[in-house]
Image (tube, rainbow, N blue to C red; front, side):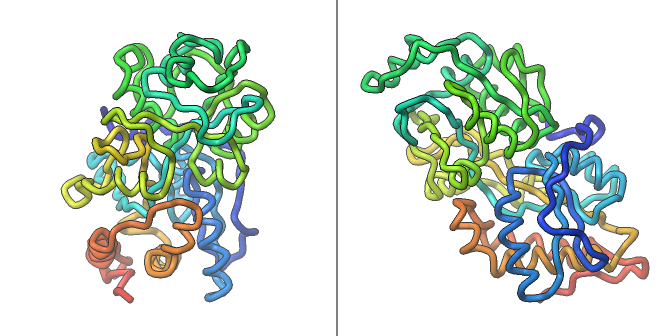
Length: 348
């Protein structure tokens, strides 16, 4: 598995901004995975400081393209860049929060958490090998659930997506067929289904399509009151998507030993682990053209680390461990500098 390749980042998608832009606002673009928490943080931060955040929720591929083009102060991606790409383009990468990716379905009579899938069955559905909801593999996992004989309508991302990167990473880990025939990437050749832009688009499409299945960050399932499924994890245990299950996946993560903090949390071992957990990342230039703007962005994320934990928890995101935050901010102070070589972040 290779980290997301900057050179093949997807093009721009539809723009969804947190606030109307003004000259004083912080500008960023990218991953839709963290949009709900960035929006919540932005509202609170503007109330306290008067500084807004103009964040375009366009997908990880679009965010990387925009930071590469220097049209925004920071880019956002759920698929971490390689150490080689970070060095090549002079970027610093750091994580903000963690969350869970969940399968969501629209099946009459099926309630959230009533249906359970395992990794192989999920991969077979998205590969078009299981085509109806009453297929034997699904019925075996759900003997008490009444399932229709209807065709499964698969919904996937159409844009360059870090959520897709983590989703396909998981499917590659649990299915040799998926690994060999489709693989892991922010954008793949989907064997079946229809595409939608962003977590927002997938959520809306599943809500509008009977007998459908898609995958979204858990906050989208919560906010839209969607029917999610449970999963069977690496230890063979049925688990529900909860903050505790997401935290369990991150418990043994080697943040400090991974270049750019690019830890992949999918398919971790542990009886209580949610198997599709992921971190989301920010990209800033180490020597930005607009030093003042980058300094403001770092102030915002410093504030979010210190004040945004409860807001993150309310949306079932997991705040970064304190030791990771200290390490990240030490790197800000030593590596992100202005034209005079002085650090743009001096601590708080």
